[in-house]
Image (cartoon, rainbow, N blue to C red):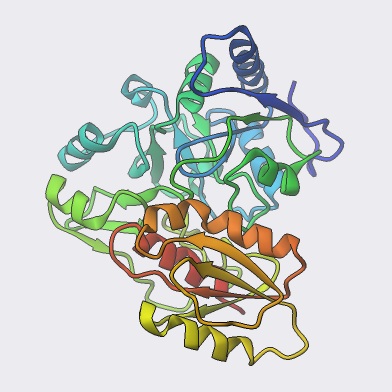
Length: 359
């Protein structure tokens, strides 16, 4: 079925509903098989994972992978992640699996951990932006695993949104950006974690986290040894001079349409700081990502109830939904507190800082 147009225009996007708790139903089997057919034919299918919705294509088909970049308007310097349904799928895709990687796979696969491993010649250059290491993971979502297994091919899948914009955590978010540009979306409801996978290079010593996620540095260290977080040696540009070393390290990602302004303060000071910041934007329609515990009066045009500051996993799950909701309310400026850095808070801080970056 796939389209072969350079701009991916004119496609009728199918919305295929799947209840992840009942994959045995005829409706679920039909929807997943339809998605698998599209993937095998070289088309594009948005699929749910436990992190965000991904835009999938046959990772072994260079033309299909090129369609991902066209649909997302994604630059060629930004590599994508390959998703597999079981470890047997790694055979023929990678040339080596370090011992540290094997320990991490045993501990966190299926799950939100992407490992950078030496790729084989079977992987098209576009997947890795020409680099020798390929990001690969096994998603912990029953619909994603069933789709990949039925398609019988590894699936290259970055987030299913226009490049640089807020990642999608529902099928509706996918369609906001890509309706008419992709073949289908498998709608399995909201995602669990709400932020993208941790990306780790286990081939270095110490290992390097290129993108923080739900699998934390502490968990990685406890499982497989020393690890550090990647720090760019220079300020990245909108169009880098060379390919990115890993998915998720581009400068401006995850951004809402509104200008995003971050407020970094302890919880007891947040209300006052947010109120003060809101006054700095006269003439703008100000929206606010509002934790439950902040009760101080803040003058804003729109609010998104972000959940409890003390429940960062819930806040992570709602982060992108909140930014999209405030965009939909017509906000031109969004004020957002920076969560504490521990655990999944590190992932939220990473995404928010990249989303707020302005060239």
